[in-house]
Each structure stands twice: as C-alpha cells, then as structure tokens.
Length: 259
Image 1 (spheres, helix red, strand yellow):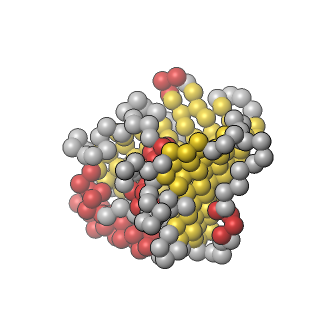
Image 2: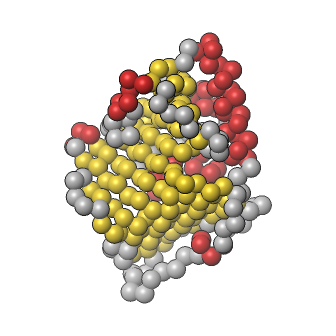
C-alpha cells in the first residue's frame, strides 16, 4: 500500500475489527441483490444529505491497526474535531493513549491538525513537529474533499462513483439494531485495487453518518476506526484547531506544496 502522508491521515481519520467481520459472522447474511437495490440507493441518499448538512462534528475515536500475519496490533484512543466554514474546514485529532499487543495501555500524546492548507503532526514522544502543505493558501481544500481523493468515504463520495469502484452489499446483522452495515468489495478495475481488498462501513441509523470503518489492504493489514459519542452541528470553539508547539520541541520540519 502506498505510504503517503495523505493516506496516513486518511487511515487515522476514517479507517479504519480485528478479524475483519469474522467475529460475529454467524449473524451476518447478505440481503438479496434484487431487493436491496432500492434500499441501497435510499441509504446512500440519506448519507449524502447528512454529510452535506454537516457543519461541525466531534467524537471519541478508537483507532486499531492490526497485522494478523505478524500477530501484531496497535490501539490508539483520543478525540476528533471537525468544523466547516463557507470556504474552509478544519480537522483535529488528539490521540492520548496507546496499547501495543498485550502490553498495558499507556499515555502517549500525538496530534494531527489540518486547516485546509497544512497538515501538522505533533509527536510528543519524539518531541518533533512535521508540517506538510497540501494546498495553495489562496485555494484551501475541504477536509473531506481531500480525504475523498484518496479514500472512498461513504456519504462523501458520489453514489455512481462508488458503484463503479465497488460491489456494494447490505449486510443484515440481527444482533445490531442501531446501525447499517455496508460491505464494499473492490472491483478488479477499481482505482483502489492497489490499496484495498475490502472496506466495511457501519452507519448510525439516527445520525446517518459512519460510526465504524474497517479497511483491509493487499498485505492483509486491517485498519479499524470506531467513532463514539458523536456530537453533530453543536458549537465548537475555533481555538480547538490552534497549533501550539510545546517548549523544547525541535524546529518544525516543513514540506512545501509540490509545484
């Protein structure tokens, strides 16, 4: 899988369950395609409507990266904040803890801030800051537009584009009453064929927004993200998105926009 800063942020934000749905597979049955076509379109339309009306979003985030081939996993927990203005949006993720394999959870701060132009990564363990410019200052990009170019976010990508790239199946889970499960299988000719084999989305029925995402890459690595206790379109202070470099940290390493 390509290791770019943008894709790294994408995986941290939205990807992104241990065994990729196998844990409760006895409850899961694909809905018949003929009956599901109209239902799928309805689900995607509701998602697009909810996404279009999103002005602010905050939640707890649980991000797990596992490599079954090496029997290894890393679990991070923290908080995510997003706010959209007329011409710009901002996003921040604060990770506070880390747990590796069977070790105990410990405190470890790591922060990502995107302001439409720059992604700033603050690593407290290494006491370093990295800044990557992703847009012209006069032409800032929306956070989800940036992500959508590298990862097919349900609700933020056009329905027909998704259907061209994936075989989309609605999964019936009799044990789950609060969310809808969509399984996306990458088509052989898909633009994502060199990055992922499958992606699963769980959509909160009340919010009509993703609450859990799992992606599996070609190396069988699994990226899982759970978005918990979401607050949608509630007041969010702009100061949350300020970048403050702690005393004693090295001078930021800056990667300008490639012309």
